[in-house]
Length: 357
Ligand SMILES: Cc1ncc(COP(=O)(O)O)c(C=O)c1O
Image 1 (cartoon, rainbow, N blue to C red):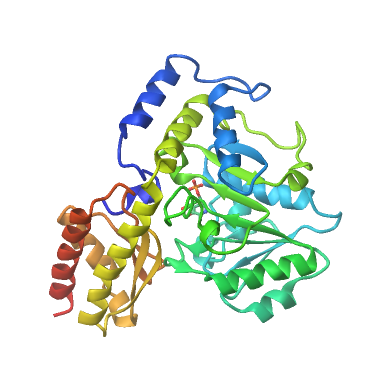
Image 2 (image 1 turned 30 degrees about the horizontal axis):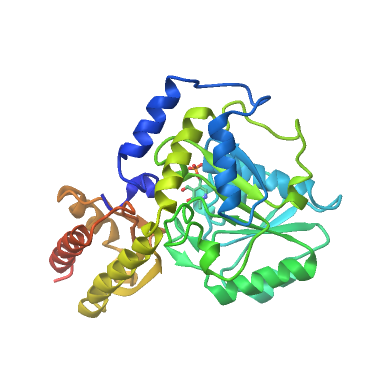
């Protein structure tokens, strides 16, 4: 209920507009080779271009797959010999070998070494280290505007502006992984749209098809020029059924008032959760996040019981999770009501009071 599986079913399960689009599409066409365009794919690409900085779109089936595409694109679009990508400690970019190597959390690497080379993880908010790590081999900086799996940790507009400036200064591409923050989750269609900077490459997946597997990468004409037919591809990428679901999902999200509503409910959720910080200051330290992606940050003694809070809430019918072993993560469907937020925060307050008497 407050997890959306995780940040996927943003319109709730089986939203009528998405269900209708999928039903219509499965009766028409479920697959065609990517040697050809399909109508839903074209419509989706147009919607993404009209509503982001992107000029061109590449489609795949999942988050990791579009991040792989971003990594390949950054390498091929850069001068020869430049292949290294800097990412941040605490980041999560996927579970294929290259996206795992990009992920700045060693716990996910264990047992899968040796990982592909060409990635350096830089401590969070250490701009000096980030700049010092740029070498003649560096081609890009890749980050999430808000680390989801890393504990709902926003990078902040100033930090992001400085990262953008470093990219401009050193002729690097900036890759934004908006797989979790994209598709209205933060109150704007993409998080970058409220953070005052624009990346060169951006990836999205999760909520794009409201539960159907589809991912997309958008980029500028200039960068996209390095991917020509045959450079990169995917048999099922942007398949007509997933694309039809994504078109229907986007149309709901782009309708008047929808994103403003996300922002309003996100602010309300923040204020409600803030009361818990006041009530349990020894265990809960902060509310952070954007829109309807919020984290309740636990102190060290609080974090020891984070999973217990998640489990007790599960027994009471509320789904949340404990991200990065540091924050309770709330990612309700964007259609959540104010009453449902009250119910969740009421139940959470009782559970926390029981666990930390
Ligand atoms: C920011 C981010 N990037 C990439 C991924 C990987 O996406 P997928 O599981 O669809 O491969 C995730 C999944 O949690 C994510 O949150």
